[in-house]
Image (cartoon, rainbow, N blue to C red):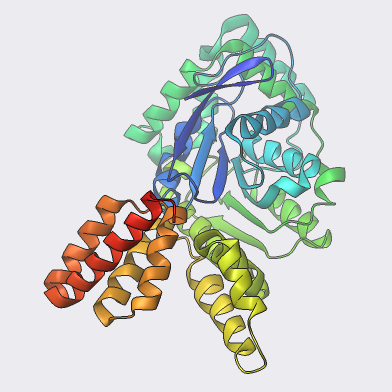
Length: 390
């Protein structure tokens, strides 16, 4: 899809269900949103994955002149505004990771967590960037193509089909877009602001990255830890260069999923409370908590922290699928009160009536016709209530 973001028309790829937690992935210089294809396929099971093409890259419009990191972070904010997204997890590779840091510094309330891959607080040197930009503006992308590819992937991978795809992305990048973004990198020193970020973060780097080497990633990780950012994690991807999202996609995906699954840590109650409200509705949760007494207060905390904060928050399954699983289990076990509660909650989880009917057909086969018959009867009554505005 395309959205207007300030002065440019931005191409955005969105995967995952509406209503799932938003997660933004920002690509590297000279590529486009497809550099995250493998990760997006896995993350979209649990998140609404938003991948904009950067200014002058992919199908997004370019503008002439040098860009700034503030300008590029502003593009991201404008895209989220256009999509009606408030806060999100922000991930980025290379310049995408720098834009993510800039965005977090300017919009701390909109940054749930950072996932920073093969990036840094600054990427020297100014003179080398100016030389590269001069080559691109004077001779085109072909002047730098081979040198760039040699830094992106390891020698043994450079002729592999995915690497050839990276080369095609580079060739398709506009001169204005590449040169403008390159100068944004050249002029950026994010150290003063990144050293004040207090947001959970994952820092990843390929062990063979010469553009943003392991030492730069370690310095970034240390800056975040010293700033007091909670849950800062660091991982080195073996046998990978500057774009491990393509060369070692499974390793990058696993690290991201592990980080996202562990988010919340000791704050599982607050995380669970948010999910419980999102699924069951704020009014129901308020009634449950307000009605708690000394007798069941610990039980209410237990289910909020354990079921909602440690299971429903996991990224392995989309929320709609978890909803359907609960319906299948409660129907099979004859837990009518819970079945009705979670059936009404499908309005919030995105599970459709067609999917619910298919789930109950499975119940009929594996748990028995009587259980499914009872569940169909309850479902029809609740759907009738909703249609009548009850």
